[in-house]
Image (spheres, one colour):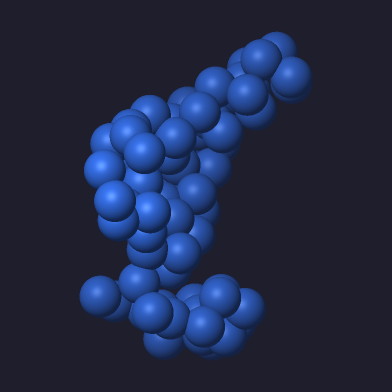
Length: 71
């Protein structure tokens, strides 16, 4: 109750899924299962970067160069 650095709730998994549901709702769904899987991989990688002490844009650049950030 006194440590404000700890999140108020423990719904990180729900927050990670929320963007996929918003994308699905806005675009009317994914055209193919492969597109949904690729979107999930990209969102998962970005979420992992945010949860670890990795430089954001540098980790994305490194992924394109074939050296992805692995926690």
